[in-house]
Image (cartoon, rainbow, N blue to C red; front, top):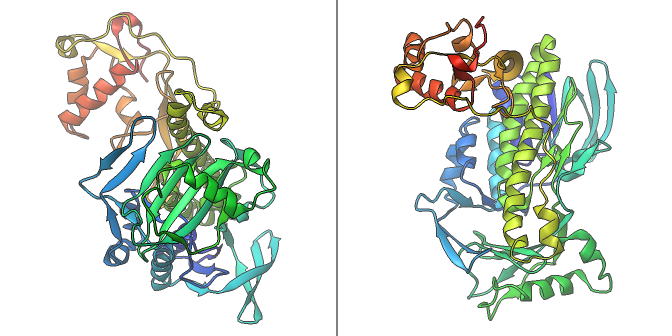
Length: 475
């Protein structure tokens, strides 16, 4: 049994701790603050609950009866509109209570909790590290084989962080009043965007996202004065005649970034310590939990299968990089909608698409694309440009190497399609079979319907080509 220590008990830290305990490790979680405590990120995207099934935390979160989100008021590139989700998949939570529930689940799974507690020293050795943790007025020594950093933005240390979009500052404050909005609001302004969310305790949180450099140009104004001035330019609080600001105005860095030094053979970074996505997605908590679940499999592999250290580290780093790129392009597209309507530097800077990683050049479409009738009449074979390569993948509780296919028609190597390993279906595939015959040849492994879907997918991407297009010799 390996000893694992996690610093930070936010959603990423508690989820990682719970999952590592489930995997049979001796886990200690260190958190400097007492719970519950106020925390930003009260609006949870629809995918959070499904992820909590993995650690068993979903039941307690659902039992808390946090408010379901049905409608969101949106004023973006078009006139104001109300968007509805009849399934009410999103949640508005008290983050202090939500985080406490996740921590309690970790405790129930056997995780030792030190709270409030602060790491004072960390001495690293070849076999792990020794921590000096201050709690209840004394220093506790912790020996750990593996250390996880879940300290949020403060947990990056001296690692190489790559900023992935314009530097953004979030100003926020909490309000009370009888006429406060009862639904979340999102609005695009001239040089900022706004987010408002009604919280379970009856307060309303308003956030203004601005460019850091432009904000700092007006140093003569107080933070509160600038916040209120910006807020008056939006419609979020326009109908709130009796609203009273009941908290100090605060500011927090909201710049997206990717940490390029996210894991070693005995350490790993979780949540915002590893990856921060644009707040426009409102899915930061979901991404943190999802990343923590992956990180637990990576850590389990590093501790129990030393021969898979390199693939495990490659898997984690590439997963973070792919998630960062995907979120960057999504956010840039939404910023571009305002930039395209004459939006100023704030919008144009964030609409600039990040440079993607180099990819193989795309091939021209097959010379004789197959129609529906030819699906059962035209012989095909594998493209001569297809390669089989090893790819790190999650397989159960470990990262393993799976044989994957690589082709210019794909964005990257693919090991699984629809839950089915792809390479074993293609190795040894005879030349000249029709797509229908190919699907039937797989019937001992997958259904005919799934086989036809996979064959069609490969045809559309040029992996399967008609014989006159020059298939490769299939081995």
